[in-house]
Length: 392
Image (tube, rainbow, N blue to C red; front, top):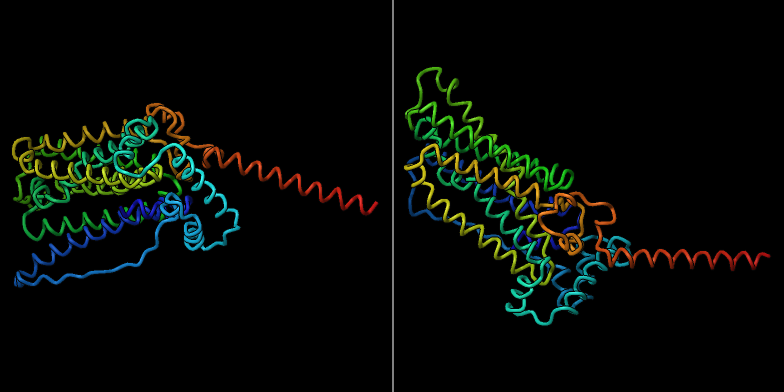
């Protein structure tokens, strides 16, 4: 539940970058694993019983949203001030605290109890929650349907399938693939997710993945490379590198889209009452689909050959259409404003894809802030009139 924890603690202006840091660490670990495999292939004399491991303990504080939803408002406000580095009377903290309180009070007034039966009933009977749940689960299914785990787990076999020589050369190519993913993910986390958003990079990245998978499949079908046999002198550059470029472009598209978007969206859209359960189910879906695809990949490669890559290309293309119609832009929206957003049909979200300034804050808090501003203005006017009367 790391993405949920990061999203709940993050200010909305940089929530995307902080939440995707979870994925950045995963990609970093994967990149290191690829290069460790390459190093081991060059250093064969290793002790198989050497199982050194590192452990790191982190001290974290409870999220303000979790505390306030449990009625611990004072502790929630204290942690919110600590996380934002601002006093309790600051306008930014005041607005965010009001939004969190408003959602918590609404949920507590509408629903009683925090047992799992009540939570699942809330997901199933509330149309807004059903839309969010369906959106998040489908994003994770398309996330795995791009075939990225097949490339991660069977990269040496896939590179050999397109003609890269087996052994250290194949593992070196895999290491470069991991490095490309890492660099692209760093660029996305630091420069794109909170400036451009989630929706557009996901559609562009998935389209790049789709085209790359299509090219790889057609390459294997028509070029008919010798699996793992390498090529003649000069042929490696002329034949293999175009498809290698497609694989590296696939890594870039993955890092700009499906690598991080499902985690960010799932961590942002659910109300506090059901967020943990929904996030858990999304990650369960992520890993059960991952297990199914990676278990099937060796058989698909043996029986379908190039069709394996065309299959992933088709699934990715369908996913692009789903994102275009059903995923709104979440950049800059408060987590509490999602209630207003998902009161509309999921299939009409493309009409509300990009929020207006009023839609960045939930309507209840927006109205309350407007009343407070009006009262402050009235108070100032009364003071000014009183001072003017004294001068007269």
